[in-house]
Length: 257
Ligand SMILES: NC(=O)c1ccc[n+]([C@@H]2O[C@H](COP(=O)([O-])OP(=O)(O)OC[C@H]3O[C@@H](n4cnc5c(N)ncnc54)[C@H](O)[C@@H]3O)[C@@H](O)[C@H]2O)c1
Ligand SMILES: CC[C@@H](O)/C=C/C=C\C[C@@H](O)/C=C/C=C/C=C\[C@@H](O)CCCC(=O)O
Image (cartoon, rainbow, N blue to C red):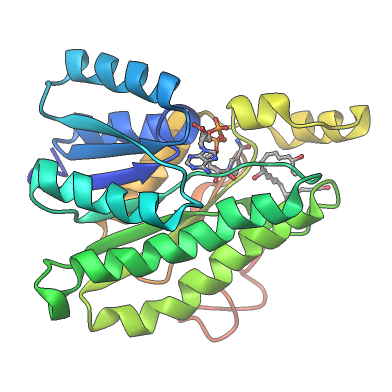
């Protein structure tokens, strides 16, 4: 029960990596606010989780993370229901190169706004108890993705913002980290428009299960030594950390993927 007494707020929680993360956090004793734009699936998912765990362990908040009012309400509702928020997982995301401005709004701008709201609601300097923010990026946020340049830009933005916010959030008692998974077996991957060559590449890289990414997120939520970490989850290396020049332990020889 690694999360007894903690309250988590997970966006994009109705399915995929978000749902796997919610389930794992519930298994470890957390109370969880599930936020998602898909109200139909979200309500059904939350009802199943309440049966599996307990009625008062989870609540669903219909939320479009690109709507500032709804994003704020997501925090307010979770705090009203469970008394606080101590873990925020900004997981909601889309992969849509055609509507790249909307994709940037969902994947990056909303993650940035939610991180700022986490400070407002969790900071020691504002009467909060501090906590941790985990932003879900992608291996496409460390390496180029020729088949999704705008998606990759949104994910590089998450890595850059997370690493840049680390120091200033220390005074708030908030750790911020990001996780960069490789291809993962969810609806996003299943519905991605790819050429046959790209699909072959996906098969050669391999496909993770959402539960593997959830375990990585749990590690970041519970390891108080991690702040500003860029965690990778790959078929080849499992859970690892990507170091950048200037990071303690960085060596040009070791930073291989
Ligand atoms: N699947 C992969 O291969 C993969 C790999 C690396 C990173 N990721 C990232 O993991 C995260 C989760 O993706 P997934 O693979 O579970 O995809 P998914 O499509 O299964 O789940 C994404 C969830 O986000 C929700 N969502 C979308 N737009 C939203 C919005 N505006 N407001 C609130 N919720 C919204 C969807 O309704 C859905 O429930 C995303 O940030 C994605 O970029 C996915
Ligand atoms: C808009 C992108 C969309 O079409 C596909 C998205 C699919 C999954 C989500 C994404 O986060 C997964 C990224 C996985 C990257 C894995 C390995 C990287 O090194 C990229 C390899 C690219 C290559 O070798 O050509």
